[in-house]
Length: 156
Image 1 (tube, one colour):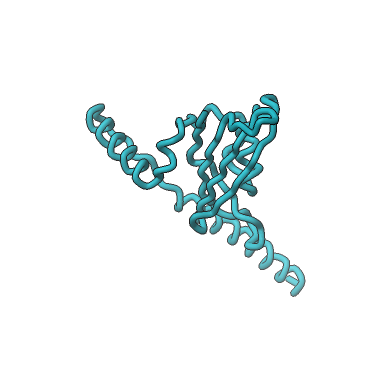
Image 2 (cartoon, rainbow, N blue to C red):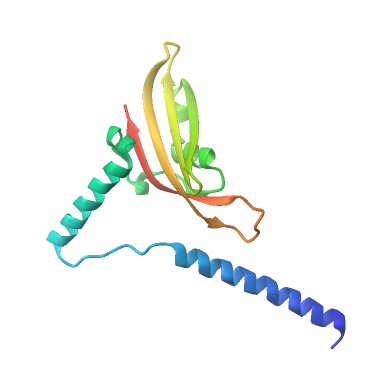
């Protein structure tokens, strides 16, 4: 084989190995859900988990949880603000103005608050809160992280 062909094969194999390793590490970072067989144990675990969430996320107690299945868009994306706005795309039909705030309390966590202001009197109509974590990165290191919605809530 010629030197050019050997170099080409090494580059191609390196690309596939890097992609495979990235997929492997991304898959291994996801936590598996705990499944209980007994109803009483499941309820106890769920109650403990929910009480820990309230302590860890005290702001959540002011919001009504929105099941992620009810969101109208993808739960993953590269920009937290755009991802949150797409999840609540029905806001545009309400009229008024929107205020979007993005906070990064930790390196791998984003909190997006969308405030829908009705009319000209600046009265707050609806406030949405979306919590996200990084899901990993795409193939290239220089690419932005992929964010995933993990919780959403609404407050009137």
